[in-house]
Image 1 (spheres, rainbow, N blue to C red):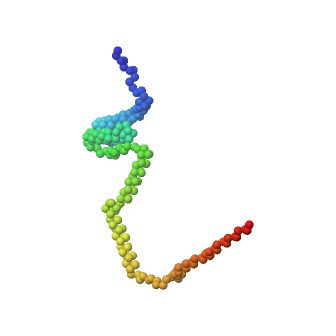
Image 2 (image 1 turned 90 degrees about the vertical axis):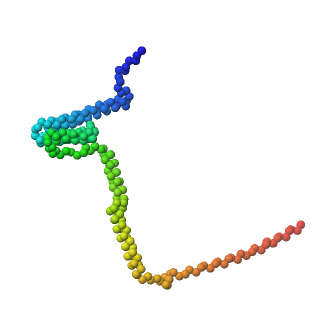
Image 3 (image 1 turned 30 degrees about the vertical axis):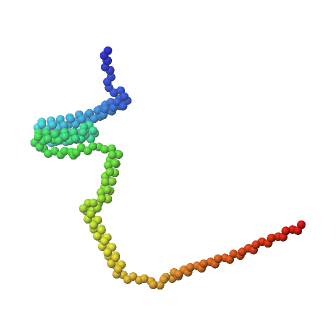
Length: 206
């Protein structure tokens, strides 16, 4: 007999069901931002090709760039994809309007959490301390080290010269209270008297 196909082919495990819920929630949040970015891009192209006011077209282009930046910042699209779309949109806009100067926003910067920002700050501080510790490795650091080394050498030479020119006075007589100690006399050994042998008592007469 042929096996009948299952009625449900989706996730069955708890982790799989959780992934489905996460995907639905993420799609509900991020999809409107993707749609908004596409809408702003289309509006900017329409404003550029319709032959209307240049300022209105420039405002529409700036709004499209801002929408792409917001979508990349929230994670709806990749940062490189946002940069690519902005570049292509600007090229089309310039070709349609004859090269109207428009000030675009900078590179999209991905948001980081507080913990990641603190970690990055600690890394920068430690790197700065390491660079300060390695100051003698750079050209300026080597020059400073050489100058300080020569200054120390000159100071040492000057102090040695002053020490040789000053007369040295040594006292020939010993200081008061520094009398020579005489060795203590050896104590005479005590004479030990020998004990006389005890006399034997006479035996009693019977």
